[in-house]
Each structure stands twice: as structure tokens, then as C-alpha cells.
Length: 311
Ligand SMILES: NC(=O)c1ccc[n+]([C@@H]2O[C@H](COP(=O)([O-])OP(=O)(O)OC[C@H]3O[C@@H](n4cnc5c(N)ncnc54)[C@H](O)[C@@H]3O)[C@@H](O)[C@H]2O)c1
Image 1 (cartoon, rainbow, N blue to C red):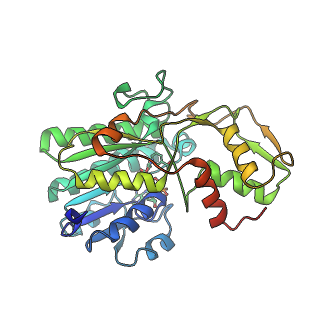
Image 2 (image 1 turned 60 degrees about the horizontal axis):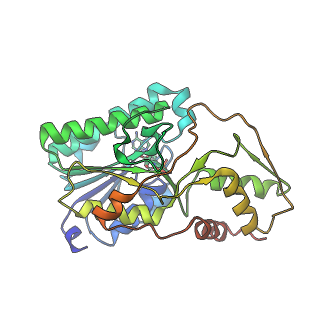
Image 3 (image 1 turned 120 degrees about the vertical axis):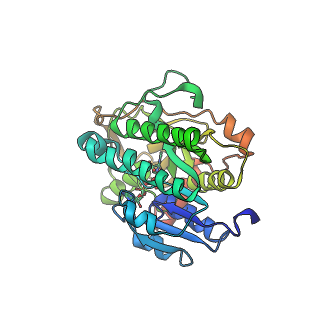
């Protein structure tokens, strides 16, 4: 990984869940790392845990602050509004952060002639009819969040074509691991409050492709280092799908609560929720020589241990 040695690297959203893990890994590869985050959902503790990085508390929509930063060689753009129901309630704000914000980051990259790795999402596929879903399935967003990610991707490709920027798009499935938020933490929070009952929002039949954050970071580091993949798009998932009900049962087994906790479903989900995510990861495996390693079960055990939840 010596290629990173002299590079000036920026991680937007570096105080967030995935951005923190990425920054932590990058900090061991380059002495020139900048975390750029407005801390809207990111945490200062995450920044403090990457002490060698320079931290800029800034908004990606603030071009003045972005442009005031030194010339970058590589920008990982992860800063985003990430909550699907919030995007449905606040489509303008979601658009500003995810679409216009991406455009601002691309302007910074254009000024610096920097490479960009863009964090996109399974949400661009909406409710696919092909499983496992390949990158070529195309855009069918089902939420404002999905659509704002599509717009971000389209701007990336436009900047590559028209300005010759070196851009790679990565689409994440459901990323989990230490310090994450989302369904695993939601279930754990509920079980800590009341271990007799676990309520699942929706039918429980919604399926997700859970991939561990360290596997995602591994792929992102590879993508940042490779010059031969300009304009490519990669699905980053585990390549398997698990229903939320199966996930709940797995967690109860790990916590020794099987048979003790009543699992209920609300049957109604939230607006923009998709039925099934299951990625075809053939391209990332072949072209990046990448293989996700950590299983969901190990992943949950790690989170349970991190949160010191005892049986
Ligand atoms: N977590 C997942 O499962 C998942 C799945 C698909 C895609 N993604 C994408 O990966 C990226 C990281 O997601 P995450 O789960 O770490 O989310 P996160 O909310 O933990 O991180 C997002 C970070 O962006 C920062 N941010 C938000 N708006 C900003 C702005 N205007 N200016 C500067 N910083 C801003 C937040 O403070 C936060 O630190 C996002 O682009 C998200 O869309 C995540």
C-alpha cells in the first residue's frame, strides 16, 4: 500500500460510521489525511480516535471552506444524509446534501485534479427484479435518498467524461460493524430496554445484504490505490441476503434469549423502504481482487461484546 505514502487524502463524512473506519485505516497509510465533516450525525469521538488526521469542521455545501483546504490527490466522498424516511419527509434537504453536496465535492476535485471515490448505495436500484442484482441493473430509485444518490452518481460520471476526472463509484449494501447505527443497534437497544419483547418494523420479511465495515474499507483502500478502474462502478455487499426476521432470531440466539423473547411485527413499514437487497459482487471480486470475509454472526457477536451486553 506504499502508493498512499505521498498522497494528500480527504475523507468527507470521516466522523461518521464508515468514514471513521476508513480514516482509521488510511491514517496508517498516509501522513496527509484530512477529515472533513460538519458533525451533523458524525461524532467528535470518532475524529479524536484518528489523532494523526487533520480535522476540518465544515459543510460540503460550503465551497469557500472546501476550497480553502490544501490541494488533494484523492477524495473519498462519504458525507451524506443517510436516513431513507428522513429523505421522504425532507426531500429538499436530502437533495441539497446528497446531490448538490456531491457537486460541491466534485468542484473541489476539479480544482485540484483529484481522484474521487464516491459512496453510493443499494438505494439506486430501488426494488430490483433481478437477484443477485448486478451493477448493470440500472437506476430505479424508490426513495428521495435513492434518487439523490443517483444524481450524485450521474454528476460523477459527467465530471469524468467532461473534465477527465478519475472517478470510481462504490455502491454499499447494508454496512455493519463497531460504532454502526441501523437495524442491529436498533434491535439491541430495544432488547436492552426490554428483553421480553422485540418489535420489528415491517413484516420482518424484508431482506438485506449485510457486509462488515472492515470488508468495505478493504475494498475502498483498493479502489483508492488502483489507476486502471476509472469510471467503474462496484457493488460492495456480502453477496448473500438475510431476512430481518432471520436476523432477529440470530441475535436472540447470540444473546441467549431464544424462546424467552416474543418477536412481533408491525406489518407496516416506512415510506421508501425496499423489499430485498442482494448484491451480485462478481465484479468487485474479480477486478479488485476483493473478498468479503466477516460473517454476519461474527459481526453481531463483536457488536454485542463492544456494547458489553451480557446474557
Ligand atoms: N451505512 C450503510 O449501510 C450505507 C449503505 C449504503 C450507502 N451508505 C453511504 O455511505 C456513506 C457513509 O454512511 P454512514 O453509514 O457512515 O453514515 P453516517 O451518518 O455515520 O456518516 C455520514 C457523515 O456525513 C456527515 N455529513 C452529513 N452531511 C454533511 C454535510 N453537509 N457536510 C459535511 N459532512 C456531512 C455526517 O456528520 C456524518 O459524519 C454515506 O454516503 C451513505 O449514503 C451507507
